[in-house]
Image (cartoon, rainbow, N blue to C red; front, side, top):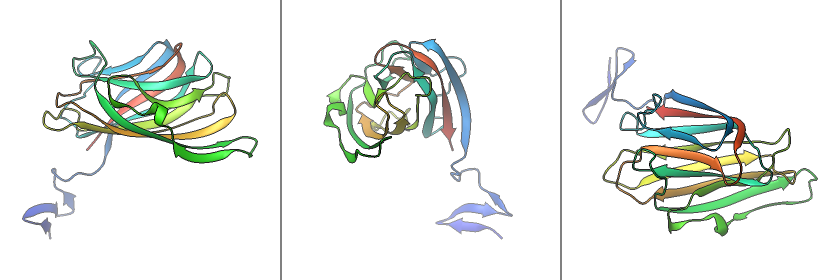
Length: 205
C-alpha cells in the first residue's frame, strides 16, 4: 500500500519516493587547518560541490584554534569562484554568555557585529583565546546558494572558550543580498592564522 499526498506518491511498498526530502547529510569536503590564513570552499575546486545539487549546505567548525589571542572568527562569500569575497549582507547578531567564575551572565544583541547592506566579513564569534585548551566550535547553514531568483539566507551558531574564561553562545542570521549564485565560502580569523582545526561541509537532501 502506498502513501499519497495531493496526488504525489510519498511512500510505496515501504520505500520513500526519490523526490521526498529526507534531511540526510552528505559529507562533501573536509578542510584541516595548519597555520592557514583562510579555509576556502570554492565550487569545482578540490571536489567542492556548491551548486544546485543541494538546496541546503551545512558547515561544521570543529576546534578551530587561533594563533593569535583575543580574535574574531569570520565568514564571507563569493559570486566569482573565490576571486573576491565581498557579497552585500544584512545580518543580526546576539549572544548568551556565562563565565567560569559563575558571577557574570547575560543575553542580548550585539549591534556592533551586525551588518546592514555591507560587504564586510561577517563576525561569527568574538574574543576567542589561543590558550592550549581554547578553541571554537559551531555550525553555519546556507540555503539554496545557487538560486538566481532569491537572496541567500544563512544562520550560524558558535561557542568558544574565550580568552577571558567565558562561554559565549553566539547567533548570527541574515541574508546575502544578491541574486547571483554563491559559489565560494571563506572562513578566517580577523588577525593571525587558523593554527589548527577542521571545517566540514555537508549537503542536505
